[in-house]
Length: 158
Length: 174
Image (cartoon, each protein chain N blue to C red):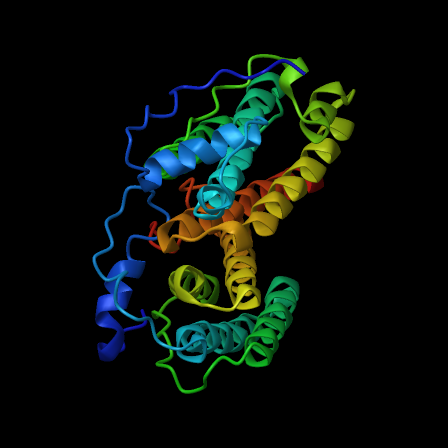
C-alpha cells in the first residue's frame, strides 16, 4: 500500500476511485506534479517485475517482462523515482504478486484522476487495465473466482 | 436507427444560465438546435462522451443477456453496473441518460456481430473483438473527461472490460 504522508489527502480522494458517487473533498487542492503522481505506479511496476521474476514459470516470465515494459513507459512519461515500494505479503509467489497488482491498481487509479497530461492519463488507464487483466490470470491460477467486481480498482479482496 | 428513449429529460432552465442549463442547452445543440458557443464548450464534450459510453454499456448488457456464452453470466450484471455508474456522472451534468438497448436494431455493429456469429467458437471470437472495442472506446474518450472521479470511473470500466476480455481468452483456451 502506498502511504506517503504528504499525499494523504489526495490518497483519500483516490480511495473513492471507481465509485461514481464517491465524494472527494480534496479535489479543490492543487494536485502534485505528474511526476510525483506517477511515481507510485513506477514503484509498483518495479516491485511486480521482481515478484514475477521470483515466481518464474511461463506466466511469471511473461508478466515480469510486461511489468518492465510498464516501468519503461512510466519513466518515458516522466514518473519520479523513489516512491515507497509496496510490500508483498509473505506466502506463495503468485499470491504475493496478486496483492502487489492490487497495490499497483490503486496507484494507477489515483494517478488517472489527477495527472494533467492527456498522455499520462491514458497511460495510467492502460496500466490499470493491464493490471486488471493480470489479476484475472492470477486468480485463475490460484483457483479463485475470476471476476470479483465491476470496477477493478485494487480495493476488492485479493 | 430508431431514437432511443431517455430515462430523464433535461431540466427546464430558468432565466439564469446555470451550468446545468447550459449543459442541457448543449445537448439540444447536438440535436441540431442553435446554441451559444460557450455553453457547448463547458462540460458538453464530457457529457457527450458519457452518453456514448452508456449506450455502449447498455448494448453490452443486451448482447450478453442474449448471447448465452458459457462462463459469462457475470458480464451482463457488471455492464449494468457500469451503465449506472456512468449515468450518475451524466445526471450530475444535468444531461439526459440513454435508456436500455431494446433490440438488435439498436446495436452498434461490433455488438451485433457477437449475436450474429454462428457457433460457440465464432461467437467467442466476436465477443473478444467486442471487448477490445469497448476498451478502445473508453480510452478514446478519456481526453474529453474533466472531473477526476469521472475519469476514474471510466478507467475502472475500461479495466473491467480488460478483465472480460481475458476471461474470454481463458475460456477459449479451455
